[in-house]
Amino acid sequence: MFIDVHCHLDLVEKETDIEKVVKECKKNKINFVSDGTNVESNRKMLEYAKKYNVSVCLGIYPEHVMEMNDKELKDEFDFILKNNGKISGIGEVGMDFVKGKEAKQEKYFREFIKLAKKIDKPITVHSRKAEKECIEILEDLKVKKVIMHYFSGNMNLVKRIIDNGWFLSIPTCVKYSEHFQKVIEIVPVELLLCETDSPYSHPDRKFPNNPNNVIESYKMVAEIKKMKLKDVEKQLEKNFKRLFGR
Image 1: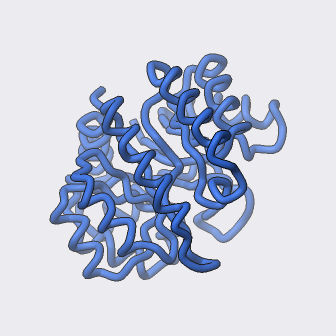
Image 2: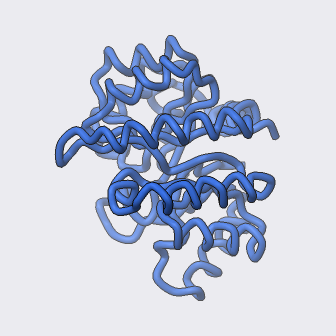
């Protein structure tokens, strides 16, 4: 089984397209986890989990945290906690400092971490331009079950992630990204997962991407680690089960 540990099924434009993607994934023996990013998409995640029997995570993307007031955010935390039995983890959450540092993002990233620890499920972390800060917060709160999604920090920070025993997911853009090829080189295969970040990050720089393309990340892991593709498939499935408890 190949596993796409991070995608956004709700961003597939039409319901018929979603059904097509899910059907193709089942045919190709590809499992995937779809992450919520806001109030609306979190509800869609639960709908897809029930309708298509797929794995989902719930969370609020940093940009959307900035758009919500404290009451709205508290209500969403309560909603996620109420539905924690239907989800595989917390995500996509974290911090994004492209437009500058934001104390509100840190506050609610900490709250999402506490929620993930409370329900004992993995947390998928967005850390664009806030890589060091995200690591420091995760270390401060002593988190164990972590996926560093699309991690673009330097190799010293990658080594710090390795030391913490967290997982790094390799996006399908690895086909042309020297950064992620280097990440594969230095990260033990026991701490690797693969993702598409669909509909983004297409391996051939197209749009849209979809979970069926996660095989491209697996191929690059196999090539760089000098492993058979089947062995990579088995090891990453083992990694996934160790992290998600199934």
